[in-house]
Image 1 (cartoon, rainbow, N blue to C red):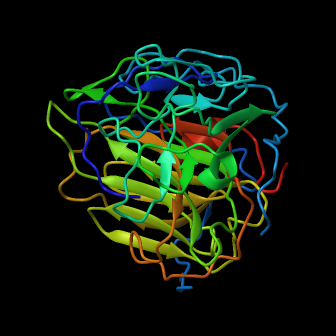
Image 2 (image 1 turned 120 degrees about the vertical axis):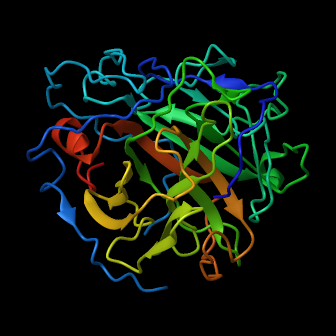
Amino acid sequence: MRLHLPTTPLGSVALSCACALLACGTTTAGSGPPGDGPLDSGPRDASTHDASSGGSTADASPGGSMKDTAPESNAPAEGGADGGAATPDAGGAGGYGALFFDDFTESAPPVGPKGNATTWLSRFPFGGVEYMNGDGNVAYMCDPSATGSNPGAIGYDPFAIGGGVLTIRAQSVASSGITNPAGTAWNSGTITSCDEENGVPAPGLFASAHGYFEVRAKWPKGGVEGTPGWWPGVVLYPLPYQGQDMPGEIDFPECLGGDTSRSEWTIHPGPGTNYYGPGPVDLGDGSWHMAGADVQPGAIDFYLDGTKIFSNAPASTWNPNQQWYFNLPMEVSQVGTWGGGLPNVPSPGGPDPGSWKLDYAGCWQDFATRQAKGPVRSPSSP
């Protein structure tokens, strides 16, 4: 996405989904248990893959994945990011050995004042900004409520939950009839798992210094005709550490709708951008795909559908105890160069609205813990 440093937030509203209530913390997570796990055939290391440069349309309805029927682990709940116990929750963090887990099982995403959030804030995390055009995003990030103190509350709700799936929708102003303060042509949304006020993590949300962060999603194909189009991103941002802003951003991945056969997995500042593709995995093929980043003191490993595809060292400017949290925006791009410079590719066009579907987002102590205790979902399951 883009590198921003958090600042004091301005009147935000929270998107609350089913999840364990976990506090932000700073300690290093321990190692997970060894052994084979529930990913298709165990971990496969494809880090030697030589990615050269270089689907189907997203469902119109929120849809839903078949939630797992496998019994939950009987192991004690793992410690939270601050070393405390994670709160057990049916299908949530305690059941999957996770520090944080949300599988979007509530029937609707209720909203409330910031501070009452249990899982997500529906905003960018850095200072209440609803729109940033530094990388060519032309979508305004909306709060789902019709009115409120958050400038993002304009009467457009970008979120829908059904069948255990969160859908984030980008829709043109022309088709919705709802304008936004930035005067952009599109409205959309983002969710973030933590925030900060004056360098201190806001209570009730989630961040962790180390861990394996993963989402399971269906990426949209197409977008604004003649441009790269839909631009969803799985992003980790750092919280301030000991009152000071920290550098860094981890993308895993960013993928433009105009060419979903390639994606960008990026550490910046740091080693920079890794391209994956074209093939063997096209994120826009209409299937569910798992994307993960194992953030540990000595390395950051990127995983796609249980296979390690890249590994890079953390940036030298990062403090090993700085905490990371999710930001999941569904942006719209009208430029052809962003991040590491993915080439401009003509978009095949797509539906209006465009939809990015999220089955779950979670964080485990490391990839081994996720493999041993995480939810059993194959990449191709509905």
